Image 1: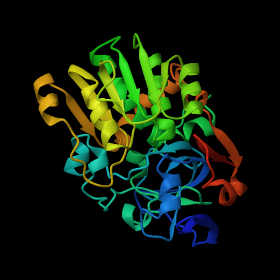
Image 2: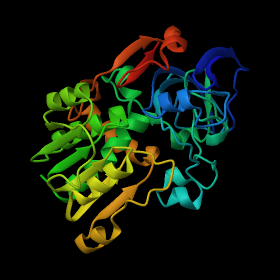
Image 3: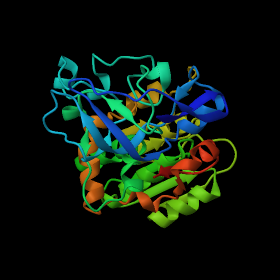
Length: 340
């Protein structure tokens, strides 16, 4: 089989690899469409993780073969693949914390498309990919939703949902403020979810005009920002830090209303001392920094998308043919999808 490999920082190429075979509880899939996660492009250009490794972890696929102990997944099924691996049987999984599975551990968490940092489990941009624990892990793809939409769900769309979905369920109609666009698609998906789930006002602040236009088209009140981040913006009960800047993070936290909720989708690779802990304490701010728990969130996200309440296709998406993956994987795009 062929797979797309990040051979060195800034370089990708198709390479040959042995065909995988399913383990007893696993399956072999044929990817149908793969979306590029917001982390994939900088990860590819900057060499964040050791190379070489096969890329791609937002995948919708067809089941080609199953192991002898698989009962609920069958050849020909169309499935969505959570980007994190989980066994479904350990004590951690039984508690519903699939992203922290005790079996699949790795420096960046057990995941597809991260090489040794993710446990060496292969990437989605391949003719075939082996997955473990197929009955537990794989999510049936709903009819009527195209592959180029479904493949965006496992990471970035789930990540966006966690920033506003549970919070709006607890506080219907609450105002949402999204600051920054370092994770290019996630902030826009978050705005789309906030509008769809009934926020009375969604404010979106970004440093790039194109993303501001996209957010306005989704129904957000947009502020184009230039220069240093202010101390704070007008407060909102639900805030999202997507700045990737310690000063932007501090601004977002200060912009969170009393006993409000701030979630960061940006990744901070170096320590920051700018978190205003005293103000957070006196105002009762809850702060959440995390990867999305893909297997736990996907069923809810799939329901919202398949019911038509939220449409990821409204976010600017560049769709390219599978064979062009080696040419376009590292090129600019708010969201990039490769489809067969």
